Image (cartoon, rainbow, N blue to C red; front, side, top):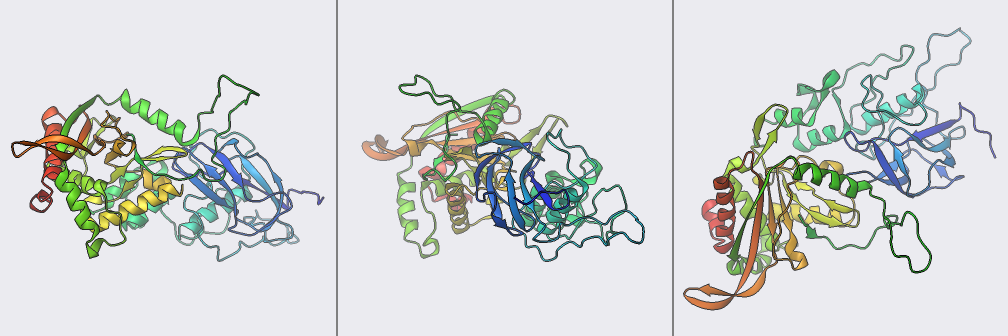
Length: 474
């Protein structure tokens, strides 16, 4: 075996692939010791508290060691794989401190790396974000990761703190975490024009939203087979007829549990219910399936329920808000990022449709289809689950009549949709079989009183009973 030296071996460390995450579980290794890897090649898949993400290696070389087995939870910043780069690409050392004339020339960083993952790498910073476990990151590795992170976001290499002066940065770039850069890209915001409010001049998500000048839960079932590496293995399997099985709480389920507990015991929940005849809505769904403008798109009752909620919010905008405890302010949102709760093998996630209020019905149908498809494939990104303002959870797909949903943290309302069933109903003075469902709206009673909550729920019910109101009210 080739001897590993400090000069030839690079340790790739677990990056922060979300915003402020502290750990991730290694789901699957795609390489083994002895395999040759190239810059940008995916070497493993990890699961954070928000999503499953594939990690690419930032240099060429030969895999010498996998530091952790599949199923292991590793702290961000801990080395997970060692690669011998002596026979591959340059080691990407930073410019050294002044040395005697005989000192070797510093190695140059390779050019032309293609962006492969938003949120890649742990950039060096003077701000201490969280305690790190494991070996300290070296200056060379910090330079590599900082360069990769900046290049992936299309801004070129950034300066890295080092004991000696490195190459002078020609143009300073705005400081922002990868998910914030992705948000800015999605919203069309130039980070250079954003005024930062975070520590040490870091741009936050709120800063990006503020720069936008124009209005710019039991879940819906997402059936899918378990993806490779996602099966949960008991912590200690017992032989024979075991009476108990213990399953570690981690990843998405751990984060969801913490969020739900925090929401339930922070926001005073109130839930109201209404049972409504949705026969006309079901007929409209069948008609829309034949509409040429909606061919190939996801057309179902959830689409019209989502549109009805958006119309109700337009008529009652105060429901689309959040409670800022630190500032003691109610924050009214002039945009709607519509969350759709989805059940996946990894647990409950709530991705949202950005600026759903501005979408036409075909655009909303397309966005719903993409959201569900991405969740089914287990590829929902952390950015897609951030910034929601209101949520729909569809318990009806499980045959459940209704429920009392818990608010998604930071939101003022969540709508639960029950099963749509054929039931006896008084229609035009006679009892007839009609398509009926029950809606439940939970809201934060700190900023939504009973009148406002009732108006929103009544508007949704009225639209679903008489969907032509989508035209007159929308």
